[in-house]
Image 1: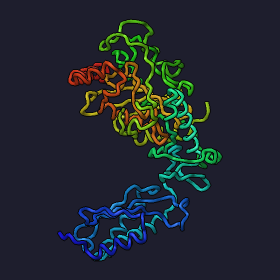
Image 2 (image 1 turned 120 degrees about the vertical axis):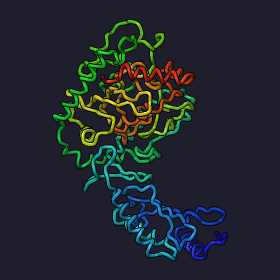
Image 3 (image 1 turned 180 degrees about the vertical axis):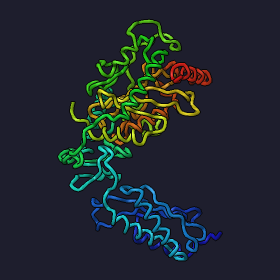
Image 4 (image 1 turned 45 degrees about the vertical axis):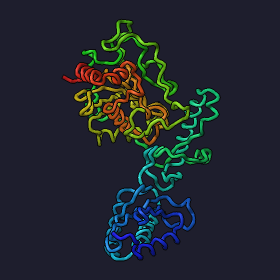
Length: 322
Length: 151
């Protein structure tokens, strides 16, 4: 291993830094460049607002580079689906072979940029409404490169604002002063700053107008029968929540006004099965649950212990209860 | 009732077409926003072998606010109380409209694999889980066998 850097590499780095300036990051180990990283955007002149896709290119220089191909990874793709990424990877492989023996990073950037320019429209669905983006839709790109119909994002931000205000109102005033404003991206929870009033004025997603009505299929009905049979067996065995308990009525929410937790009214179709299973007596507690507890006040999970909203857990499908 | 948003219809269809292993969710006959759910206890957890019934309700402003979910089958777990209510961040302040019925139910299944007695909802259970994990796990297995097995 040589401590000196191959001249071809140092020339390449110099050129990259001259062209990309702050947009390229070179990670070095013992002064030997190891990883070159840059975010590639489509070419849209200087109009950043028209860049709907991007990807981070990471080039790990192997010890024999450029006589041996570097390891190339694309990270954090935004607005690109797997097909496009796969195609870019295939082209990268070919380019690496073609350029063996000479610096290749700038060639890679160019190649990726061409691809991004070609597919500079978000692919996939709006995760809020699950409709695709189609001709005529008004959509917005957040600073974190996630896309939503403007209409959908407006609904999210308005709901978020309302929830936030309710939580702040519960805080003592000295903590209210410290509670930071927050509006987050539904996908990555990065902060978003958008003009809700402008978004709100956008029309709803085009596809939403032709929504087919919902109907129960035979398959669904069969599953319902199976489930109620299981429930009946569990009820018969005393395995259903609330049986033999004398706690408050179970949380069965049927209207938005009941959203805030705590005990609620039970409405016919929902609580029917339970009502039959759960006698409202003040009999003894179930085995395994010791003495009666004070009235349950409902989980207050809006803020962490320092009185700041958010950041209580990692969120996402895998997040546990924090 | 107002027309069911297509997002709910889409989610329902996908739950049928590409079911999540170990999870089934079926809308009620009378209310398409109300789902009957069965989650199987994860392998290598004290809930293994159990079939846990839950109810899930999509409020009027779903997906802007989180679904309401509750266990119906009794379960011995530090983050689930006697009434089946679940302590899970994404059902509260960490809700995001990018989450779906399937991701919520997966998170609940994950919670069964990873109880968190430091953020308890059922205090007595959490206490035992902390001071005598072995006994707590035995209790959880016993409750699973007694209440959640289908035989």
